[in-house]
Image (tube, rainbow, N blue to C red; front, side, top):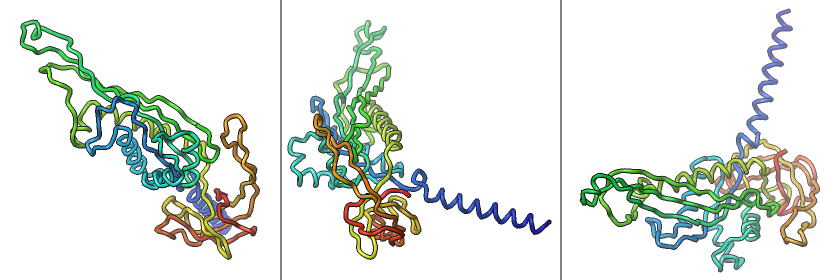
Length: 309
């Protein structure tokens, strides 16, 4: 009787270990997807600049990159890498990022999601409501100060080239109080910006865009690519995105790209499974790549697509 209880307990323990191991290899828990944030175009009147001297569009894209990195949920491409490809492909000369260029650069960087857009509003407004002090001619009154920040955001699934989210994010902060009439103030350092109404409105806009990225990333499967293959297979993802030694991955090969004749947008391609690989070293290039043993299949090639098993 006791031996039967012990056997049942051991089976239950082994089952728990299997479930815990599966959870450890779960994409949702462990593996970071990759995102590229392009510099936002500045469509405002150009009268304001970041404390560092960059345009409002560049400043907001930098804030978004910082917020995504701090979240710990994504691997975020450096803006220099994005600009390098734009320059090499002669796609950044106009300064305007399109759906097609964002998708193409995103594919070359190996990211799942590309984010681009334009800042359409960024500034202050001040209105004098009046009051007893103003009536006495003291030049004082109850004032309403407000700041508005608006960003037209687009998110592209780089695998398909499709825009999966588009929204005009608009935030406003305001306050009322007794104040002496002064000319519009400006900020010249990070602390002043964070404390200002426009700084608070900007932060709200950035938080909303991060939430948009979170919800839309769930719709896109994680993937990586084969760098090279011989007796072993090298892939362009490793410990930095959460891949673990012993983890098995499936490898696919894309067929002919299907392009919509009306829009010119890629509709994806048919895929065939090449085989399965297992990670043996996840710390190549400071965790940016992995070495994998071949579990099944053959003929692995550079640019083959790697996905969760």
